[in-house]
Every structure is written in C-alpha cells, then in structure tokens.
Image 1 (tube, rainbow, N blue to C red):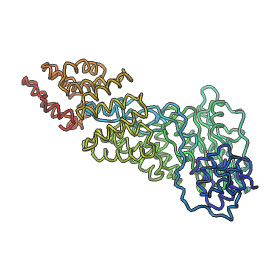
Image 2 (cartoon, rainbow, N blue to C red):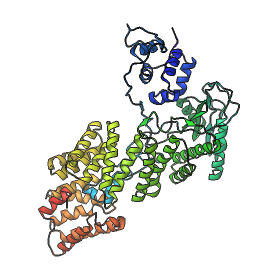
Image 3 (tube, rainbow, N blue to C red):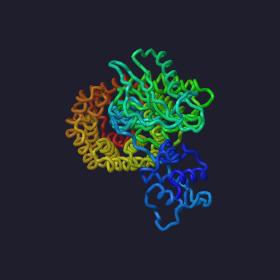
Image 4 (cartoon, rainbow, N blue to C red):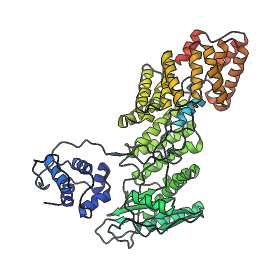
Length: 609
C-alpha cells in the first residue's frame, strides 16, 4: 500500500500542476504539501483538505478514496477498488468548478479598514453633502491600516468592525548564503526582545525546500534593504534582529510577536528559486473582511536577476506596513508610492501596493472628488492584476459612491458603484456592508425600480444582522420616499431603540413628519437634530417645519444658516443642494407666504424636485 505522500506525489505529477498552484487553489499551505510529499508529515489532520485536493487534481472516485484511506480517513465509497496507480488510470473528465476556498481573517478592531472613510448616501438628510459624506465615511473599508470603503452610515468617523489581513504578504528576493535547505523546527523561545522605547523588527531565517546545494540568505538580504530604508527614513529607535530559528506557520510568528514585543515579524520559505515571505503584526486592524486564499499575502514572489531591487521593494512594503500599524498614514502612503516607483514586476506585489495607495489616499487627503478619483484609479490597477480581490472591488464601488455624492453629475459613478457592489454581493451574499452601500446607491439614483431594489438590500441586511440600526434607518428613508408613512415610522422607531444616540435618526423623524404635513409632531425632533448637529446641515429640515407652523422669521433664519453651511462646506455643490430653491423659499417667506405647498412637499419627499 503506497503512503499518502507517495500517492499524492504521483497524482500531482500526473496533473502537471505545481505545489504553489495546488496550495493557492485549495487553501493548504505549500510547505504543508511539501512535507506530505517528502514524508516529513505522515498524514493530514483534516479530511476536508484531502477532499479539496482530490477535486483540484480531478481524481476519480476510486482515486479519491485511495487518497483518503492512505491519509487515515474513511473513503466516500468503502466498496470501491482502492490504490489504483495514477499512471494506469486517467481522471474523470468532469471539470473542477469549485472556486478557491476563502479564509475569514482574525477579527480585530477594524481599521481598515480600519480608520474611517465615508458612507455616503443621500436621502433628504442625504441630500446634503454633510450628511451624505458622513454616511459615506462610515462605511468605507478604509483602514488606518488597510481597508475597504464602506459607505453606509451618516457619520464619517464611524466605521463598522472589520477584520485584519492575513499574516503573509508578497515576498522579496534573495541571494546565496549558507542556510540549510531543510525545514528548521519551529521556534519555542525568543531570545530577541524589544528594549523599552525601541521598535523591533524580527526576521526569522527562511525555511528552505530545495534539493540543490543553492542556499539563500533571505533574512540577511531583507535586513540589509530594511536598514537602508530605515536609515533613509530617519528612524533611530528602530532595530532589526535576525532570530536564531526559522518560522514556518503564522501561529509561530504570532507567538514570537507576543514574546519579543516586536512591531513586525518577517518569516517565510523558499523553494527552487521562489520566495514567499510572511509579515506578521500585533493586533493590526486591517480591513480585509474577506481574504481569498490568493490574497496579497499568499502568493510566491519570483526571484529574478534584479535581487537588490526586489529586496528593496519588500523593505519598502514592510516599512509601509509599520507606519500603517502606528496610524501614520501620510508616511505609509509616501512609502508605498516609493515602492510603486520601483516598478515591481511581481503582479501580487504590484496589486498590493496599488491597493494600499488607493486605501490611504482619502485618509491622508480627505474625502474629495480628487482623492476618490485617485483611489478608483489604484483599485482599478489592483483589479487588473488580481480580478478576484473582493476588497479592492468593494472599495472601488464605495469610492464611486463617494465621488457621486460630491459631484454635480453623479449618474455614471452611481452606475459604476452598483456594478461593483453587485459583483461583490454575488460572491459574498452574506456580507451586509456591500448590501447597505448598494442600497444607498440605488436610493440616490432613484430610477424606476431603484427604490424597490434599495428596500430589498436593506431588508436583506436586516435579516443578516437584526441589530444593525443603519439598515433600519436607510430602509425608513426608502419608505419615506415611497410614501409609506407607517413603514418608515416603524423602522425609525426600531433604529432609535438600537442606537438612541444616532443623531441622523432625529433629523429623519423631522423630515418624515414635515413632509407628511405634521409639523407639530415634527418640531421636537427638528429641535433635537439641530441641537445635536453643529454643522448646520439640519437647519433646512427644521425651516420647512417652522414655515408650516407659520413661524416665518425663524424659518428664514434657519434657511440662511443652511445656505451659509452649504457655501462654506460645498460651494461647488450649491445648485445640487438646492441653493437656488432655498433662495426662492426665503423670498416667499419674506413676503409672508408659505412656499411649502402640498405639491412642493410631495416633490421633496419623492426626491424629484
């Protein structure tokens, strides 16, 4: 009976695929596959790994069961003939359509996300850039460390919790040295420890998997490049140390982080001229809420003839990661831009750098049409290199949404946002952020059928996360625009119960009752919204209510305050945010005439003025 490693080697050789490709498409680490083939690890721990490998290698049921039995697991078909040789039997002709497995990353505070991009939306409350950009900033998976744009709420500083990125990233190149090509046992102790006030970067010797005599001093080359960049950046308190033992698994790197107090641990493996490096950071709040097996951290970096340049690119990438963990976004952005200027040839490295530049640009420059355009450009570059990276597509979609809310001509961006977010939802149907932001985009576009589509997205988000007040809040805005008073009142009541301090809800009540011709009911909510909103964005809602109560001078004052806010904050959007209409309302009120007739209120409610 052949061993599991022998059988696996035969099937892999027959299929003609590399260990790296098998690892990428099954979620099993390449070094694990190597150990199985070499007999260093006798059997797999998980039956599911064997099943995925069998599917990728397109094994027949008999061959699959032979592999399972050799691995120590029961076969799917116990009566089938087992242990047929791959040299004598060809695989079935049914194609393997299973997509690569996805990994959910460790959940730590979101950064990327993590810091704060906008959740943009534009309902009545959204019809002002302030409320909109607040909504826009709240849902941008933007990380202080990496992220994806989510635009769903009204507070530009509030971000949904997201998960950090994987511990590995594209690796650098290396040069010959005297390291052993055989796997080194995982470290059990860490003699290297950060001193008080010191920023320590620990580099482990890379595990080698090669039968040749060629040896690589990868750790030394990375240290050399990092020391050069750190000296150039003027970081006197940063020290780089080489660990005595290699690291082969993310869990080992995390243990070293904890015991050494390092800010970064670099580790990895090499095999036949290819290097894959891992970059682990403590409690890094990145925004990779989905991380495909082939995310920016798990593909090998091909060693080419320009070893020094590749090592420098990785050093810059590492330094950018350090600045992201410390929240120094402007320095991180500058470092990534320097890395991009080196013209990285590896598509994973280039895609990762473009991604981080797209993420950090609005965090550094602010949420403007220019910064959103820059982000869209870099996310597009990312997707050209890595079309399956859902984070990049999600961020690009929310960037389109953000730019739409800040543009006079928003239609093309709204269409693009809906297209990108739809792609993400198709692949990630149980994520609420894409649903919320696509619902906002539908609401903002307001074409035939868009309100129904927005309502469906918000309803689905509620089904997935019943405690999310934003889903109720935005569905209430849809109900207002649709004229369903009972529905929006129920949803806003639920939203305020879930988030009593969420200020936009008060403004929504003010707007809803005001548009329904119930100013006396609306006024307490209007007063509460104005009192809690220092920007001036809530004055127009209260002005409409005051005018209906015959309090014209107060309404004029509120409308003037609203115009002052628009001119101060978004002068280029004066027409978009009703500047000329507000001027006409003020003139009518000065003539002691209420401009808010039932017809005008209905047009405002439907968003078709």
